[in-house]
Length: 413
Image 1 (spheres, rainbow, N blue to C red):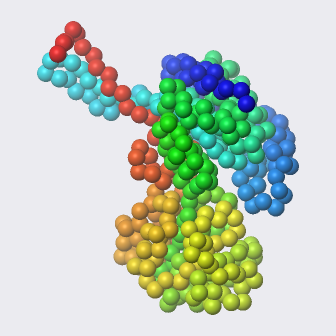
Image 2: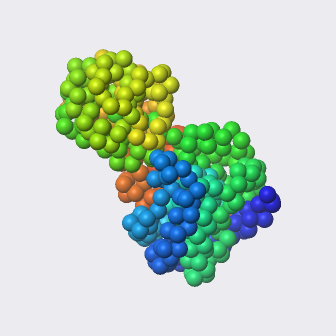
Image 3: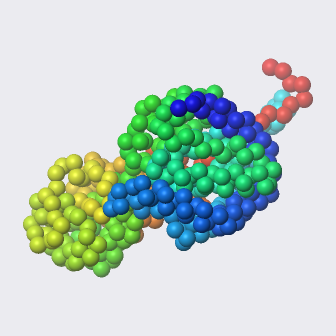
């Protein structure tokens, strides 16, 4: 594979021009992008069909790769929503005048050049590009080979929107899909300010281990729903089913269900037909296995099943004695993404919300809401599970850093 250094340098230089672009210019670019996406929808869907044709037909992760008309329209609407959000850059965060007359301002500024490494989902190409443009960041996009044709068409549409609005098209660059491309990205410390991996835990750990460029993790989600003994059973059933089956291939889908022993028999009996309808495969601990013994698709859980991000119609179930055991289990197996309790006991809910260490914690709601657009943030690059700089949906407001600007009149120290 040829060196990608020239692509990285061109993007680095384009970032300077993007910082000079007016707010109106960037808004118009995003409106153009949404319109061009709708105009070129069939071209994008044809490319996506080629990508899908290369995959195993029954792979549940194909849902992450799939684009259709409705999803494409949703992407266009998301881009329009991002364009309407206020620019996070250029805000005066702090201002003071020193005794010597120096005027100090701390202002918000773009990160600079954002490298993104992600798997499968071609919608992420549009999300990252739109968020970076709105925050005046250039971006280097490293998608996977599974979505190669989709990403090529997507970036061509993005570049057309940039050219139409007199912004350097090199501020959004698609890197080759080959894995070797990331090695140069990892060492481009002079030109790239941050790398954000989005995808499987193995991808994230690989980037974190090998990159010399600072990394912001968007972590894998081993998500739990804890059905506490004072739960409303119907409410719990609706939440659990939604968290598991509404889109099982995404990171905010539930992986492990914890249920208190006093209501385990009732709850598990009622969840069986609901899960059976969607052919959910269950990995159950001993108590849950005995209660579910006539379920169609049942396995005895191994210890490692409770730390798995299934990304499919599979889940683990464990019966616990009380909230103490549930909290201990979550502390052991959680990836600090999204965790939920279902209970009518407000004290237990508040204890759960306070003690669980995760980017998003829920009381009586599905984990599926952990999403930048659902949170009113437009979209997100990923869900950050770390604690430095950003946590939760990594969205527009976090694609910035700070700069001190000092105005003087000849002062010396």
